Length: 404
Image (cartoon, rainbow, N blue to C red; front, side, top):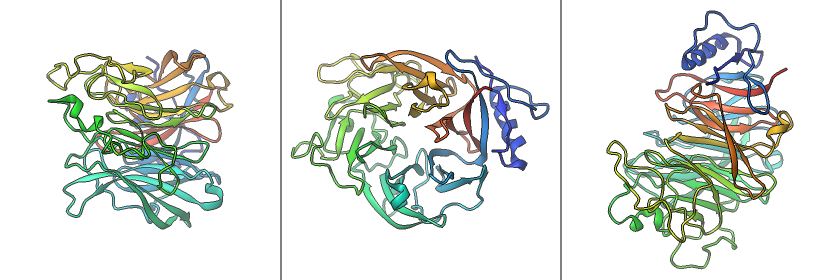
């Protein structure tokens, strides 16, 4: 296992740098007698790097977006959109955010910028939306213009047909591709995998449970979506048969849609989402029932259902995914970086693909050190991680920096 090493530099706001470093060292099981005077180096197969604190003091940070003027937007699941400016977390949240239903796994979740943000200032947010008495919730997406650290002209552009009394498996990841299409993930809303598995909501494309969707930037449906014009499927659906996709990344060169999703007890997956395809949950898979360990699936394979590009047993608590194409780590170009939340995992996985687009190899980084919620490539080519804490203790935003 690589031990976590932290560089405390000017990008951390002064009074909280030692607090964040202490928290990180405690997570890693290391003693911090005093702040380090220089960054120690973590070795990997292709690049050596250090871990640098960018800002700290977040409560359940969920998603990261980089503004062209240098600010960083970070969502906090309890319902706040925060700004990091000049290395400091501003004390006041962004105004105009939605009244998210904060319970269980739900709240304010993803933030994404419109591809033409510099001209239109449009910010997209996903969140858990409650019904009138908050007895049920679903995944919803809105957009607004970021002006003077507040959102204006806010409008909801999508509400998933995935209402449930359960407060988990929202999906809620967002990503724009190079053509300006907006992809959205929706989880299966914790529908139990029992009884007739082929009748499970994730196998029924007449709802949005367990799907990846494709929309125009205003929420309308593209005419070339795979199920447009059919009476047995919703037109927003790009792919279905997913459990709870908790990351979404568009390959910058191929345009491929990659996602990682939570399996049950075992069987987290990395999937290449293709239009119209069925990814099998819960009919096929590689996990078992929680606690009992009893089988869910009669087989991991079924004709007409897609196999994952990669699966993890035991589960990693898959969360956060980026396809690297920066210059700071040239040997990592084209690699996927996947985060994990599981207490027995908590590492960053570097995954590289072969010439056919399949998984060739993977390397664990930062093993056991960080509960990673989001993974992003910054405009500086560094890899940024939103670090979560299960009970809501303050956590930092960190980044991987090439070693000198």
